[in-house]
Length: 130
Ligand code: SF4
Ligand code: SF4
Image (cartoon, rainbow, N blue to C red; front, side, top):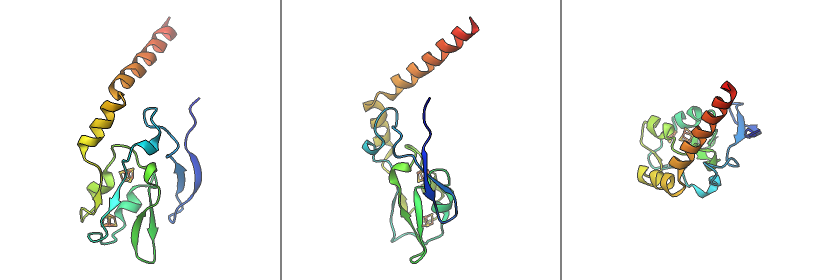
């Protein structure tokens, strides 16, 4: 059975920090995929939306001295997610371009993998039906 991510601590808001970085992305080691946020501190106004929004993945910590976010666990970021960047009122969060994401999709044959997975599930369902 697939193991879920381990809880490795709690953040400043008391939320569990899970280690998603050890979970492969479509069988590719997560650290081979450089999808994670970078912050342009010249633009950041320290509103906290990114830190608070990323509740499930806890990619960010908060620097209470400088009142700004820190990308503490980049490889916890869900590949393809850019919610925090979309929510940022200052466009201060940068991600790789969509073209790069699609290039990884093709390089690692994810369409084929997805189809195969669905076929396996269908086969199991058909077997259960008898
Ligand atoms: S959402 Fe944007 S402006 Fe607000 S703290 Fe995060 S990076 Fe800074
Ligand atoms: S893109 Fe999604 S998972 Fe990644 S840091 Fe932002 S909110 Fe968290």
